[in-house]
Image 1: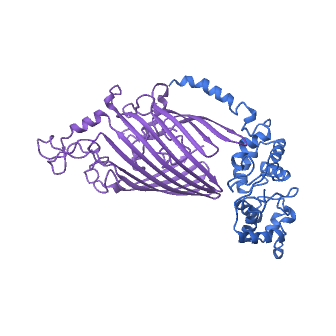
Image 2: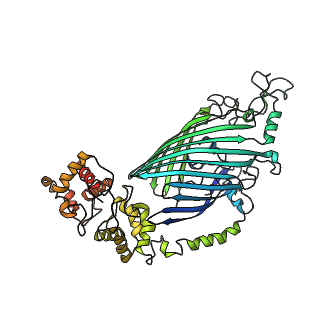
Length: 364
Length: 213
């Protein structure tokens, strides 16, 4: 569960600084009541990441589940994911109850709040300014799925979603003008063929997110209507108070003898354009009227204000022994933050974010 | 939410669970757990609560001969049977079972009712029927029904085959032919010259065996 960031210090010989933080946490109690007439699994979970409790890998927390090296580095190994607090393994606190009836119906309902006081271990290691903070305890998450198995086949079709009231990161949570709203609704499906020595899995997940920005976020963005477009004269339009985005993912995995495997995944994010999301542009006021670059952001910048991101991920892995996995994952982008070329205003192209990630897992 | 208040809740749930209740125990290392409880709580997960497993990864056990089931469980426990699904799953599961529990598990599944399996192509069925009833004399392959019964229902320690998963049967025939994973039966001799298409045909006939129920 914990993950470590190790940073080498160049000015001290033979010593390094370490940092660790809480990763996905899922503490649960479950039981099964089975007889000739019914098969009922019930459980309750204390966890720090919406969808981490889900049994299927179409869930946001699990679909491309290679652990990220840090809170920010994962952005180039995976497309942006929904649900607040996802980060590098979640950092909010929730309680979920679920049931699985007759291997047919799965239903789960939970609610989340900020991981604080007795529950602060769920965001351990994440500094206060970066922590996800929710308003109150009424931030529901739900998940419903239907399953059917026949021969070596298994099929699941489901839906999930969340409503979360989230404060802008690093802001004063006593100010309601810092509070925004996320509404997520998703559709997903998984087919699996399991017959020794082969396992084939095909997954599909679609998530729609409507984000309503906090009053302060909109006001601050509108105040930068001092931003002008590339012509140096025309002011950019005022920020929209909300955005909608759609993330579509599909993945196929094959494993042989539970030992050698690989996968191919495709992701496509589209969404509304909003000057609020523009982090690159010209600020006419800073240079006394002359056109110049102001607070534009390299690499993570967004010149268009559109979130469109498209790409694919190829993975190959091997289990030399049962509890060790060695693998490599390559993510290639054809579009990032709205476009294929010069997405940040400094000439960075989507393909410049292509990433090779190699990992070693140990699980016992 | 006060995390301290969760402790009494956990204690209550634990007392209701199989931890304390032997009638719902999933403990495979406790000789006091009745076999019928183990069958329902543990074996059912792979083999089905009535022994009619869905996935061909796990053989059907409904109406299987009790002597045969006892021998298999004892052979898993002693590691004498070491076919791949055997050691992948059954070695660990059978490790602590007592002879009484093994007998009880065999009785539980022996009295279950089998249901018919997925249908098999008619041409394959016809080829398989010839082997089942007449063997392959030129390869010294005796007719299966001579030991397994005219309804493939099993006889004494020879197992029931009717309605068994075709994929499971083919894999076991290869285990007999090519490995020492299941010693102490006539099957090594019998499968010696059988080809894979012949194995597929007879296994298909057995899966689709008419009037299995």
